[in-house]
Image 1 (spheres, rainbow, N blue to C red):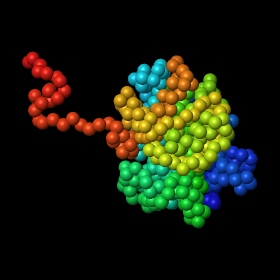
Image 2: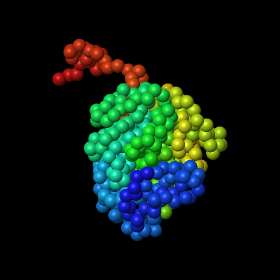
Image 3: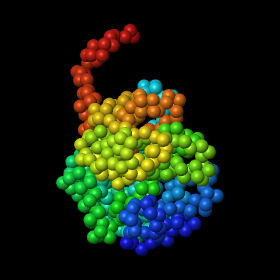
Length: 421
């Protein structure tokens, strides 16, 4: 266990077990030694509230660090200073297609520097890892996290190891190698990779962002909720549709919304948090649809490899958050995922990776089922860029129209005819 770094004691109380409530100092620890429950960061909201005003936030940097009072670092941020504060796009065209009057896309396909929401969590994790005295960082990843850890580690001049399943999309593998970390392909799926990393973390004094410093890493996801609220004019949406892999993102969206309400930054908070999974890896959504508060692990088989976690660490808590919010969950086939990707691209000009196809596909289903109403303010989280998963849509978008270098041939091909001069 790393030595605790000095914390802003006015802001952070430490870590607390999500099951038994046992408290710990703010060290690199993620599991309770009493009940083996997961740990999360505990804040001193009473101390934070007087200084965290809308005006103070709006005066902050145009990045996720405008919410630094609610992020678990001791001093000033040192990694990922430009991450976050991505566009909230009014999706009128897609809304017209689906039957929604107030649909928005939270567009993390343009996040900095690796074009996914993982730049948020990694910025927080590596800043905290530096404070804890680590010089080597690592992760288990389905792709996007590895890309972000590799990029941020390069910029921070930290040693880096990323562990990935052997069958990731080529562009995501390249998105690791270009930064020159130690890239380790494991023969197995993400759950096999994660088990191996847990063993390695016990042997080597490295900061594994989603193992021993997971409590800090996970907090970065809350900034998506904060930004949505601020960009909606300090109002919480009626629905927010969230793609699920481990389930952590959904739980932190729910936590972030509740924090803003608790701190008086929003007056009304009645957001329903809806979860989206791929049919080929849907342990959380399946449990929800069966009315269970527990899930059964599955073996992933889906084109949405970034969501292919068969034994999700936060699955139970995602089910709990959705139930508390009154939200829903559903799943989509690989065909529906590709349809969702192309629909978003062709209506809003946003090229999302397969996880985005899952979000749009489930959004479409929830509207058809009457769960999301036409007049409700709805936000769909698009968490990664389609350039990372081009293979998924390669056969669905057709080929270019080839012509000779001739005006006549061009006009004949497209039925344009001759125009009078």
